[in-house]
Image (cartoon, rainbow, N blue to C red; front, top):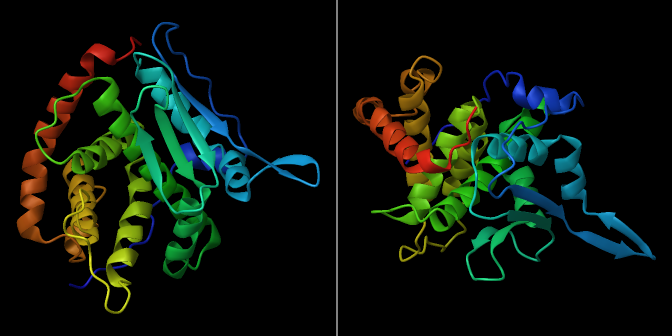
Length: 268
């Protein structure tokens, strides 16, 4: 299977405001209901506390503030949900559903993996940085998808990992930042093309193949906005046979997700 490198399209205003150092607009959310909250783990060195380099970069660009402001402005949770950024010793992110441990953990090592994997795709430094932050945003919202499925008791008739991917794309569509998904698209392209010699995908795993997630994201982007993402088809990245299904399926996805989340949407 041949996968293609994608160039990040015009970043628009949302992340550009963060990169320029402009303060994110405060969320005008209702006071009732739980909220998403972010914690950055502090490390100690020579008697001083400091935030990890990944945490500093993410804070510098205002990434988590922009995302949580958007989420808190639109969604009310049954209770507060903590998102923790910290070194883990492994490249991963997850949502823990166990009572007393509920929350999202995003490991510094996962952010560094995006830096390594996406570096060959971009010559322009600003586009590269936005791609890394785009991949970070997608995977953060993927874990938010898991949290919503659990906390809101959303029905799920397929693999939860696929549903979490779909929710992440839907949320970015609502934020009017679907282009940030392209960072994750390129990450899956890299992972699909760099399987270690003798290695193989664990087919028993609950996640889809990297190639499948790659094409799913391309499909949802195109189906959600054929005009903006028509180049995915014209450049031969998304096959025409799948593209027709993407356009037909998108209204159903949007209708069903909006219906499921309706009881939890904040007014305004």
